[in-house]
Every structure is written in C-alpha cells, then in structure tokens.
Length: 198
Image (cartoon, rainbow, N blue to C red; front, side, top):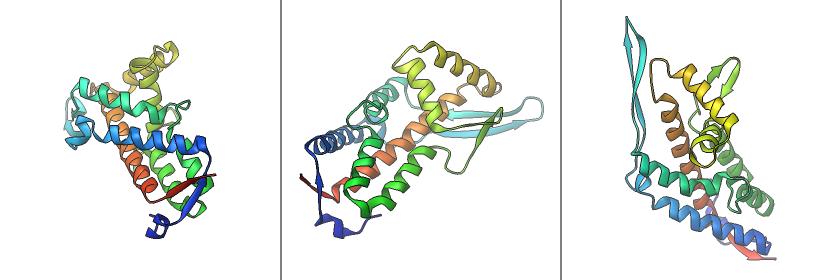
C-alpha cells in the first residue's frame, strides 16, 4: 500500500474529477452501511462426494432482500456510465497520483480476479470470471431484462448446476462480496490522498 507521505502530498484534480471522487466516497460509505457488510456476511460452501451421485455442494447464501439491497448500492461502482465507476476512479488516481500506480494496479487485479484469485473455471475452453458472472446476472435478472444474457445465464446454470442447484448464485454472491472489499480498499486509499482543484 501507499506510504503515509501521501497524506500530506496534494494531488491536482479537475472539478469533475473531484466530484467523481466525492461521489465515490459517499457511495462507498453507504455500501459500508449495508446490513450484509455490517454483519460481515461471508458466503460459504461445503463439498459432498457420494459414490452414487458424485460431487455436490451446499451453500450458505444471504437473504434475497438483503442481497438485492447490496446490489443496488454496488451497481454505482459497476456500471460504466456512473461517475463513481470503479475504473474511472482508478484512472483518476493513476493519472493524478503516479506514485500510487502500484497500489491501483493491485486493486485492478483484485477487482478483475474477484472470487477467482486462485481458482479457474473453464467451460468449453472459455474462462468463467467474476466479471462475467456479475455481468450476466445483473443484466438478465437484477437490473435489466436482456434476453441474450438470460439465455447465457440459463445455459450456464444448466451446465454447472447439474448436482448443485444454486451454485452459480453462490459464485455471484462471492464475486460481489470480493468486489465490495476492493471498493473499500480503494476508499481507504482515497483517504490517504489530499486533492486540490486545478
């Protein structure tokens, strides 16, 4: 992470960039106050192997209403058109605070890897990523009714939930939780940087 020296350094930023940073910080604080975050919810799974039925998973998932509330706050960081989109804020820091690039690069990697930091899921020679899972769910079920994404989601469920219904939802919950942790890390980084308007 960054040294404490950045606390006293002043980075120049445009009015629009400062506005985006303030929105990000405000939204991050709201995300921190979500009931699942406050209760430190962590999804978990158990693997059961049966000679007759093969491997199955059982999951601990959050209540649907609580999770949808979390998604409503998370979407501001995910959606590309939002002023506080995660990558927009990363780009501002990278441009205005060059000495923070190692840190922002680490945050980008953590965001992109999400749930799959040390695990790969390959389906038909294509890697299934946290980003893909989030994109499919948000655009087909939670925020939009994209028919192509819904078909893609249904196919994925059919392929990977044969013995473990709910597994793809478990992957979604884990991916969202991991991305939220990266948002909180980025918010902490912003607290170490003093910005002044250009």
